[in-house]
Length: 49
View (tube, rainbow, N blue to C red):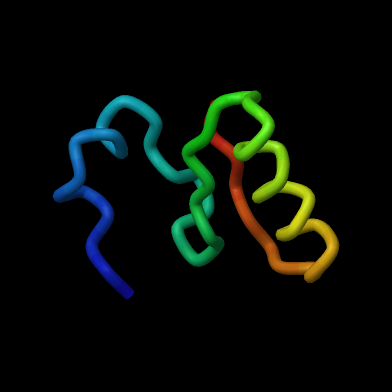
């Protein structure tokens, strides 16, 4: 797994569950589509708004 601490965005919104997919998104149509996809696929993810 990639070390998430090297990305600037993870300093502002750190992952509580680093073993899950991290979804950094805004509530825009495309951001909502990705969250719906992850829900439909049943993949565990951690959203960051």
